[in-house]
Length: 172
Image 1 (cartoon, rainbow, N blue to C red):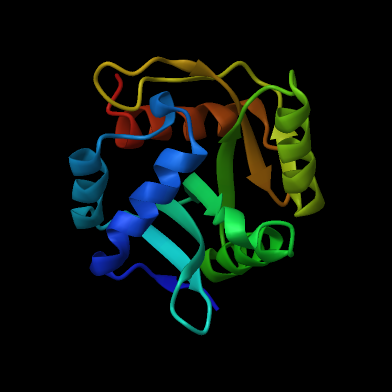
Image 2 (image 1 turned 90 degrees about the horizontal axis):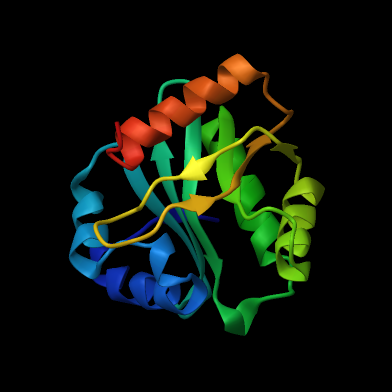
């Protein structure tokens, strides 16, 4: 069962983030940790019996949808169904449309990632989308938005994009 992150486990989460994402896809340590003070931002973890973190999902919750900013399965625990389990637990817990960003299917890894999300009831919305820089000195990244349950029409997509740009990326 997933539970909210205990603050003392943040360093482990940040280490997993650094291992799992290019530097343009996560904030500095202090910026990332400061998000824990934002009531709309949460990190959910799945731990084993020894309380070691097997996976985490960092989520922004808004009125009409939630946005998964980071999702990592600890490399020691990959390929055992944990990713699908934690993703489905989160969607059920939040009980609203959940969206996330993915790279265009231009590499084998990006295609595999999209396939994973599709197998877990997410749909690729192929509208143009550029993730703004996540932090000062970082680059913008061309991505796609995937949504749980179904594709969204262009109006809903624009609402999601606008919310992400203003609330998550502070990009106007």
